[in-house]
Image 1 (cartoon, rainbow, N blue to C red):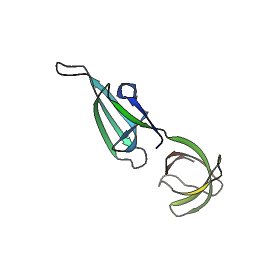
Image 2: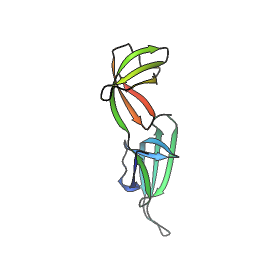
Image 3: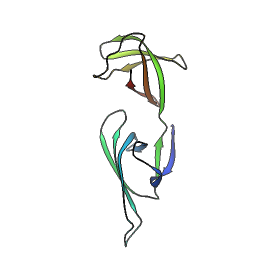
Image 4: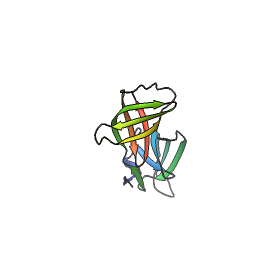
Length: 126
C-alpha cells in the first residue's frame, strides 16, 4: 500500500490521514492539554477523499497513524458515456474509466486533474 506512518502531532488541517482503512482529508484538528491521568489528546474530524463520509479520530498526540500517499495527476478525456468518462493519463498514457461528478461537465479532449490512491481515482477539476 502507498502509505507512511507518522505521529498524530505532525498532522495539520488539509493533510491526509487513514481512518478505518480509508484515506481522509482533515477538516479540523484540535488538542487537549495533558491531564492528571495521561498525555495530551488530539481530536481529528475528517472527510473521506473518495466516499465523502465524515469520520473522526481521537488519539494521544504521540500515537502513530498511517498517512496515505495520494498522487495528483493530469489526464485527458477520450470519450464520455453518461456519468462515466474514458480518461488517458498524460504521463503513462494508460486509459481507464472514471465516474464523473454531477457538478462537472466533460467533453472529449478536455484536460482534467484527478487524485489517485491505489486503484481509486477522483476527478478534482476540469
